[in-house]
Image 1 (cartoon, rainbow, N blue to C red):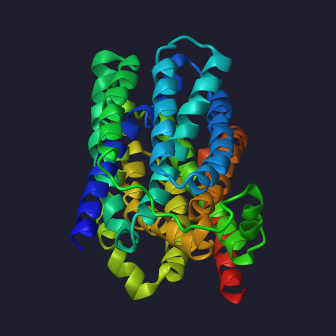
Image 2 (cartoon, rainbow, N blue to C red; image 1 turned 180 degrees about the vertical axis):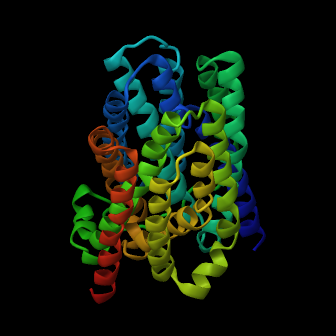
Length: 383
């Protein structure tokens, strides 16, 4: 019991420090690209490159974690690559498309991979940590909330290049913290883990349906990262307001993250996922209607429902449909598809849609696409 309590406390600190650091390079990628001089389509192409890195690295990361019985080592390796890419990217303040494509892709992709390994590690630390994933993840939201305005102040007073330096310092503290933490507890399989074992995942119909559900949900969530920010910038929002939006989003997530354990026991992950998806549809309809950056932030308050419910249930539903000896592989492969593919297609498609029909119609159509995961959710219950 004492060991479980210590693990939960350390994980809370781990998430706080991680997300405090992560928001600095990741939260200001779009404003950085705009300041360099890229238009919305060019930004979409560059940001889609992050998906390629996220997909490739996550496909291998989980398998390596399971094969070598360690999430800690691969988390730290991913974080180091993330830091090095951020340090280079923010130094290049002149237009250099291919250089920005390479290093922006590494920053965004390794951000996703590092987070996926971190979540998998938490779920496999102990049953107590798995059951308290929501409250633990809430400390990540607190770190993100505090880090967002810090990032805006750093950019305003010291320039974008300083984001990389501050991020590197926080990452070093994070790596030092992991040295005090328990690694993921792996289920042994006779003969070890081999690449052929991954067929168990790909032949599992429930696992595939869950991945497809969260793929379509994450198309909507990715548009909330990119298309809504593009609309806010077109309406006159600057770095300070974009940073405020990130902070407000993180703050609104806290109640349901802290209530996550109770909500899972009370309603189950399936009902929470379906409700969260429905609320995403309403949220994007509202985004399409409002016409000021301030009202965009007001609509963002719906983050209090959408993101925590989808975040928690994406981990538990994937975990429930994954063989025990492949739990890291199950999480990272699922994330590679439902996060990576959505990151790949959404910025380019949404950017083209914005150019063709405007931001409002784009946001409306993306929101209505939430009907697809609702239908897949009904299919999931019948399998």
